[in-house]
Image 1 (cartoon, helix red, strand yellow):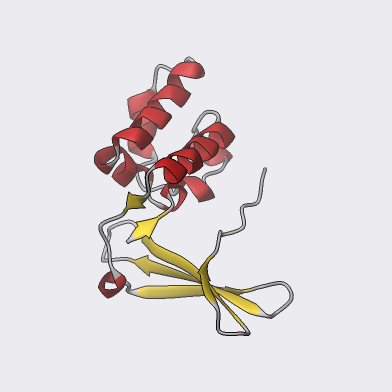
Image 2 (cartoon, rainbow, N blue to C red):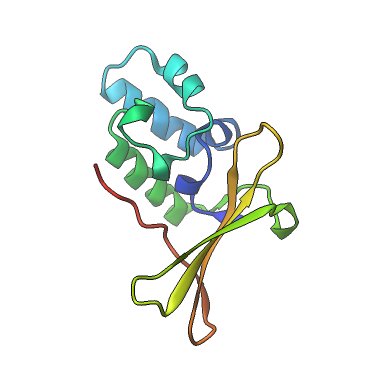
Length: 136
């Protein structure tokens, strides 16, 4: 399923996508942080879009914007399909005329992975929708 990289867990991005791996490595080298491997291992299950100060990722805004640029150049396939959806979380819009569905895959002790994010409005239009991010 094609999804934006910011919604995939860091560990999967590093394993499956060399472009995203380069983004994370560049962020650590620019910040002159030698503990890159330790932090990336600790943040294996973190979704970059939800990452905050507790994740220890340097230059988070730069990482997110670089991941978005990668998505424009080459879409990311997370290897999941609608069959893998085990849970759906929803959030209504502020005006109440649309709803956001976040389809997730979760099994036992494995980290939750987002399969797809879509929105349905009151005119039954379905489109991809960004999850709002609260900046620190």
